[in-house]
Length: 281
Ligand SMILES: Cc1cc2nc3c(=O)[nH]c(=O)nc-3n(C[C@H](O)[C@H](O)[C@H](O)COP(=O)(O)OP(=O)(O)OC[C@H]3O[C@@H](n4cnc5c(N)ncnc54)[C@H](O)[C@@H]3O)c2cc1C
Ligand code: FES
Image (tube, rainbow, N blue to C red; front, side, top):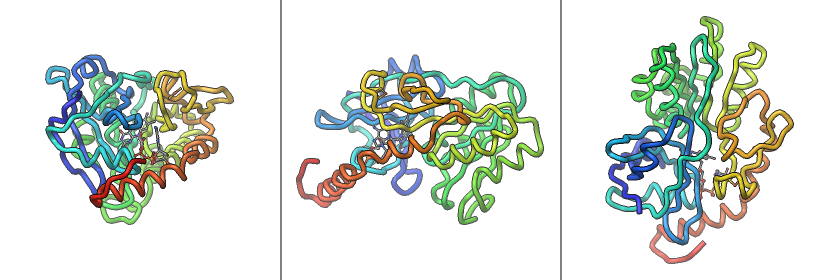
């Protein structure tokens, strides 16, 4: 069992949790992720790590409630426990050297880019962060990102905070003004795709973290199959980071929608359960 030792609400349906997982906290590297199962009837969901404390043996997670399991998870409290935490899974993020590294986060992705930003900065590189959100209250972890980056730009779709526009508007200005040697983008697929389309003509190496549907997380089940550069890859084992210029985003989006009906049904169950009635998905 893995105890939740800290919980903080960051935004509507978005929490930061610190969870005990001492073996993982000692081994994990930027870009790697975990898979959790809340209880014995639960499904397995992959989550990025936004930080860890090897001494305290804890992992810091940012969880956004989008469906049955993630909503159940954000309802947990300090002192509650999670049945399984498996990891570290996937590969350490590697960015080519030279020039500034631009780290771009949307949603939980802002948490996911922080370990890589800190690592790049520690290596002596200029690191620039961009956080994007629909509106001010959804801008996450700005202070943490500022602590990891030399400069941070915030964009909101509605202009309620930072610059009005998309992360690509901020990225375009950075590319026009300085030597960018690498970009890392973690967030919704359309965002990662738009970033990759912008950097491609500039030949700026761009890594994106693919949030394919995952089950086992070890490369065995095939659920997280993606196509990159015309070759089949497994996001859990070969990734989750891939060359953003080579990803087949259309296929990724299509595969993410495979279980929409079942996910909608599971949410109905969640809503009934949280309204106090009992049911199983
Ligand atoms: C490598 C990786 C890292 C991730 N990191 C985070 C994170 O740090 N914080 C966070 O809040 N979310 C993260 N996600 C997404 C998270 O795993 C999904 O939101 C979660 O699995 C949804 O489960 P659900 O039952 O709540 O919703 P569902 O109703 O099952 O699904 C809602 C949507 O989430 C996506 N999804 C569903 N199941 C999975 C799955 N097993 N794997 C991936 N996506 C799925 C689908 O697009 C689906 O339409 C990550 C995903 C991946 C692959
Ligand atoms: S999750 Fe099963 S192969 Fe990747």
